[in-house]
Image 1 (cartoon, rainbow, N blue to C red):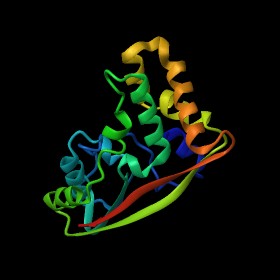
Image 2: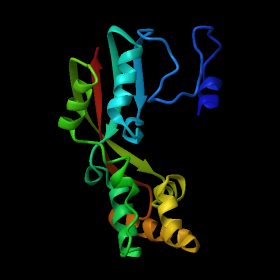
Image 3: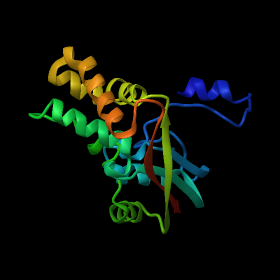
Length: 194
């Protein structure tokens, strides 16, 4: 991802692309005006520590911007795929999408954790959009084979990955149709000021 980002940006000596641990940023205190994290905070094993690190590297008055998905029921493609896989694997339903990408949506909790990390002004904006796909197979493949959901499917039975993908595609077809499809998505954009 960093290589792709660097290739899109013309050379600028002020920009340095680096991989870093969000819980232990390799940057000096109060060195940045803005910290941004796009759909990553929900993966932090210690969210308050990640928030503290963002605050530590911000100058006073600096901004921490990040976004998170709303609950899975507000994100239709992910919800339909998760429900479909639960019928295919009823003993141990694969719930990665509900648990992780869509599992960090409680705004009260997020505000409390940001406050505990030292942020004072916190605002939240809900963003509602429509996700589009050329066919039901596209999101089925994306979720079942292109996310860690794949690990949960393969842990059940690796030989059933293609079956699971087709089952998810069929569920999406039943819900949205067989041609190009659209489904509701919802996320939150959080702004925290140090």
